[in-house]
Amino acid sequence: MCRSDVLHDSDAVRTEAPAGVGYTEWEYEWTTTSSHFQNTVNTGLSLQFSSIWVISATVYSGGNYRCQGKHNMGLYSTEWSDPITLTLSAHRPKAELRADVRDFPAGGSVTLTCSVKPSSSGWKYFWYRGEKTSEPLPTQDAVFLSDGQIRVSQGGLYRCRGGRGDPVYYTEYSYSIRINKMIPNRAIVTLQPIWPQIFSGETFTVRCEIEGGRDTKWTYEWTPAKLNTPPTNSEYRISRATESHSGDYRCKGRRDSYSSTRWSDVITVTVSDKPQPVLTVSPSWLSPADSVTLNCSVKDPSAGWTFYWYKAVPKLADNSYSDELLPGNSSGTEQDSYIVHGQTHTAGYKCRAARGAPVYYTQYSEPKFVWSGDGDIILVSPVRPVTEGDSVSLSCKLRTEELVSDVFFYRNGELIQNDTRRELNISAVSKSDEGFYKCQHSGKTSPQSWMSVKAVTRPESSSFPVPFIVGLVCGIVLIILLLLLYRCRQSKGQSSLTAPIGAPPQITWSTRMRLNVLNTPLFFMVILVSMKQSKALKTLKTMILVSMKQSKALKTLKTRSIMNQRRALFTLM
Image (tube, rainbow, N blue to C red; front, side, top):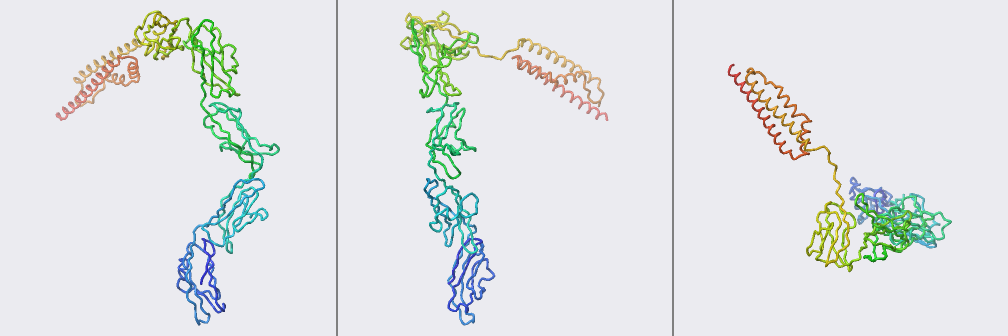
């Protein structure tokens, strides 16, 4: 019977035939189907006085192996053994390392298991701690539970490999596993300022604190991982926050590479768009001696906001409005309300809020208006100037906020609409629509309101009269074309009478002048300028096309004249 240990490329294969009685009287013969021994297959390779065949394995060593024993005196022999099959792997196997836990508390331990796949017999395992070290793990640093399994109580970077045979054949190293020893100190992550919500453009700080760790030099680890760019810090200040800064933040402290605190609890940061506060006014209709109360509200009203209050003030220079701080309000107010005393005319108000250092401002609120007048009816019209070309709607309503129909509308005291419609609609407002407007319903007239129209800015036009330039250019060009046409006809008549037969065609002064003028860049610039500046272009283009056609016709006549002269010359010859 033959036996073998099977294996991998570069391993040593030991094939053995057990001896019978009187070992020294036997010699052995081997046969194999391995391509590595093609010359010896079935030839009876003999190894006298040895029952072991050691082969340096290669990928070609795989196959079936058999053996038989022969008495050295040739008296008799055994039958051939049953074949054994060797399967050779082309790649060196890689050990696999597993840990029951990766993080363990002080006083605890971790169980590590090393194995080789595919599984086979005869492996011993070698253990290592540290990066790229070839020194085996000291026996006092581990408890060896079984072949392939140990227990450790120190943090570190562990790996293993298998080996067998003589000389020892080693597998590749396993992947490393980081074992982290947890220390009892607790990590806490905090947010400054302590606001439940952060807005786009604000500044905030996340800070990691280690309880009871003031005397230890810590390094820090964060999630999200983008905060772990070395050197890591105990806090991060984020200026001008964006939506990408939203997320869960947590931290832990490291005393060394393999001992750390546990992760802190998560603190969630949500970054939202810049807020716009909402302003309310009360009352919305003014009566004599009334005060106006403004209220400004922002999301998360308890989150340290200071409020600023503004009045829309007309700017007569450019027909617009500016936002002017109300009195006693330069540093804002902690209260979210403000009282305006003595307001007697229609006015618009706004607010905004601020907090933090550096100061972060919200957007302005939408404007809210209070309406003046002792009557029961009011004209609803734009408070800000409207841009020329925009559409505008004016309406009439009662103190009860109810819009009314059958309304008369007036501009500068002149009736401009008197039908059953509720609104006065201007689809494209112009400067001529600017003025004082009022409405009338059931004999009651609203106070007048001024509607300002802002002109659209247009590019400045030249002060020099364009029609004059276009007319002058067209006149000059027409005169030049007529002169050229006259000179061309005159030159044609002279050349047909005086040119000798067979003489080369002559280019006359008028032809040169016509070609020079038509090919001058200045001529085309003049034409292009006139094209852009006046509708007289069509007439001018027609004249130029006629001139070009005449020029082409002249060239055709000239060519025919030359050909006729050559025919006459050939006839004479």
